[in-house]
Length: 108
Image (cartoon, rainbow, N blue to C red; front, side):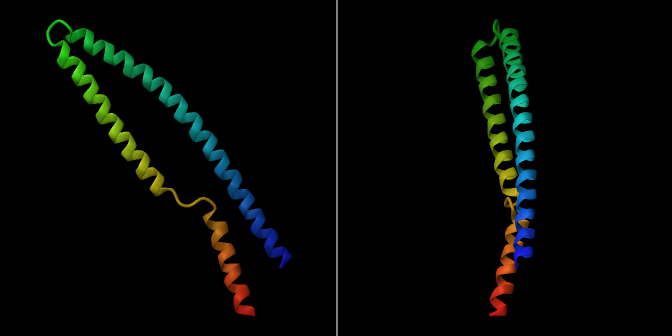
């Protein structure tokens, strides 16, 4: 019984470490991507508005805003899809603990 519990705790520890490392890497990449995407979007927005300012200033501003809204909606949709696609953290550990509990119930 003690060996089985130790194995389950080792599995939980390994899964926790993997999840922690994956989260750190993802957070770092998200921060880098966000910062440089913001720089690029601001520069592109200024360029578009500057090019169209003499002929269609209001249309240029509205077009930039509309583009921002479309990108934001697509990004939120992707975030939701990704959140639902990821499995539960520690799924293997929880599954093994459930099997252990069923096995112990069967012995009684």
